[in-house]
Image (cartoon, rainbow, N blue to C red; front, side, top):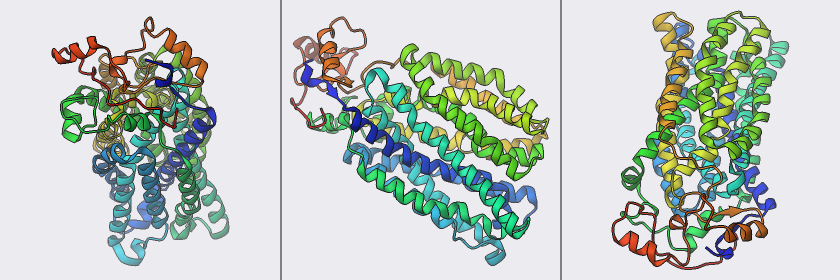
Length: 506
């Protein structure tokens, strides 16, 4: 490995890339926040002729449907991102999300067209689900590939800062709209017209997010792969670009690990965000306004902690941080729901903070740990499969399953047990996960912040335990590596490089 092989990412370019990705995730989670905090109101608006419990479940089913469509979006958009680039697909997903969210704000209600009103709502949620199937997988792939190896946890954590600040913004939009419209028009204002306002706010927000997405560059790792000719499809080479079948063939173990960790992360995450407003209103008995206001400061403080946890993972590793998340979930979840039942504002705040602790440790490293499971040439597609399978089957259905379990058993602690079950599965998967902190991404050359760091890295590459040139798209590969590959050795990452290059991203 030569100095010219190492990718040097300028901080100005890195900040542009991160900010353009974060703003898109902000927009996506703004919609989740609005829909989650308006679930009880939307049940009245779109299913007014049904009994209350059935109307709420049907409204929550709309949230679940958007997640059930995600795998389709992942299957289509993920491999597309590996073929045409990350930036183009991220622009497409952002545009689809913004348009669908804005259109929800102009839908007819059940008072106007009866129960038919739920159908266009479901269709728009499906459009959102399809676009989101490529959004998070693409965004995590993008920020992980742009981030320097030594600080990938820190820089990638800002993606989920955008996510949870976006959710808090959605909750705040609902709270402010509720306060203003009810002050002006009485207690029925939200069901009459106020519910539309937070969705319509998404139109200008979406325009800003789309503008940011137009400005972000392609990732250096993807450009290097293209220049080296390694984005070709080769069914027998796990480091070359793979289709859906090839991804499952070569990386089924990593997909299972990813599914388990994503399920653990998102059952806790969506319980804290999308389901908590419904739980607080229906099972604890607090007002819609209090349910919205209580979550906002918790999410803001949690978001501020994510970069600190990301930096911690750069020092001690991703696996120990995941271990903290799993352990704190099992220890804190039942006590948190018990404190919540007190129903006072201070108790709700403490309970939400207890739920937020494991969520923070999970999500802070998701964007750095999960993409690192897969090689650069197939990373977008593999991430889309692993992430969307988990989040559609278990994460996004958390509000629906949690409420259904309460209705079935009468036990208000069922959401806690549901979350703890998936945390245990995540802990088991963690035992098989390889450590990726401070290492180059699989199938990529090292990424650093300065030429001096590149020179230092190259000088010490023979003694560096984090460097394995056999998995890198280098111009020259030693004869020993070629012989090892030809003899059928288990490390199939060895390959002769297609060409040397000096891509403009270096």
